[in-house]
Length: 606
Image (cartoon, rainbow, N blue to C red; front, top):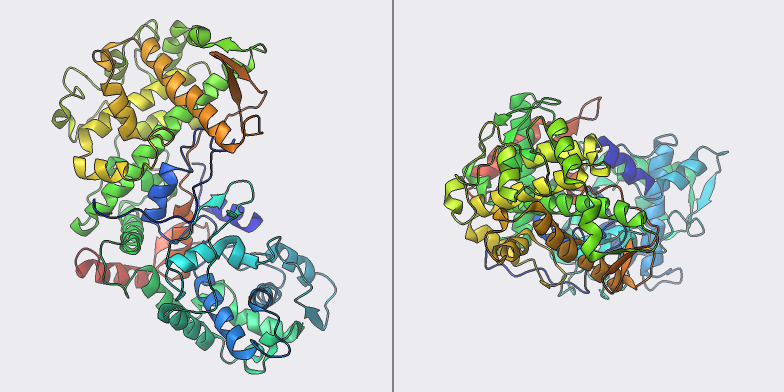
């Protein structure tokens, strides 16, 4: 949606305890597409993210919808259901949503609510800036392509999983269809007519926030044609950004629900979401103390490396120590970022492979694929862009030699003795963020050294993972692998490398890369393409025996996603715990600081 794209720009996206059961899905996660050609984002990564930020997805970034829809459902039941004018539950809810959307845009004189993601605001702006009308037929107006509005397009699964309905017994799949940017089809049928106690509490809080509006007090909510002035008044109280009004009763209740204050179970995904939100707040506080602007990139660096670099500066960053209460959740997020580095490395290798295959119209044999890379050129390029000596022929070097050139001495820190590299992030060692920076921001991923940088990124991530991730969090990671054949994970790749005949780091880069490219790039993409229907638009190449034949499609951006984090940040802004300055940078509010300190004092964030 255009509104959410703006949110991504603002957030600068370019730049279970072990015994916990996995979430129950109503259907399988979608197969890979051209946007996820190796299944690295929609499978294991999606499952990790779905637990870390349960009920907060890439398309549910506004807190107020979580109170608005329970109110709309309850108001329909009280004022419309069973009467002659009954429009049905879905139509009744959608018309109320349209009243909120159009009312908010009219109130803001043609603009969407601050923070964006007001579904249908573009069409509402067109109406608001046209010649004014006395009233509007909301049942006839189509504000979104989805006939169920934002409820069906985005929020239904999150509301169900948050426990706002009595009859929902199983988790719904929260994942987003990459092609439509809406919830996937074939969702499990859920009775939305019966709110739970939690849902009724949110509905009552929202009703209190709008109680003095003509729209509510004079039964306009049960009508399809609504006066313009009634809509404007309603939008001034019901809009997404109007949650910041001191008289808005729903913000406090929403805060308690998102932070799972009304639940006792500390071994649920809801508790994990609570701890993730507290972790984000703490990281914002740490950034402010260090004078660093918080961003998605900074969050990943802080969690993954335990340090924060000054904006635009190379070299060592400021070390960051998190409160003991947040260590466990930070380690789970670290697993997520290990997986992201795996995705970045393998997808970057894929970029290079697609470029090679594209230049061979008749296809290229498996045995000749690595012949297309000039090891001397790769070494020269890596030496130039990383200011290190990467020898004369990258393909003839071993991973151990490659890592040593990057500052990681395998003789001191061999993977078979991982305890020797715990905390081994010392001066002179290139880290994954630095390598990814060169790949992406200097566009080396599409250049001659791309496959070499990608391999180096992978080697460093493997070495760090084997040395710094204990069995508890490795097991948690493995629990999110449903199908070892299709679900790629860093744990699985480490197991596979350990099964090499002899030590993998003593083989040539050519031998190791040849095996990685075949198993994790060629075969994996073939498998993902078949999952979607062979020959579809998602396939970048296909196999004819051991001949790799390109389809003419291109793939140039290997960037992995953390699609839920921007939504979590926006929700914290909506709740008044964070705020944005005039330059749209995130900062802690006094309310947020008090909330964070209070929650951490409860022990384990509970």
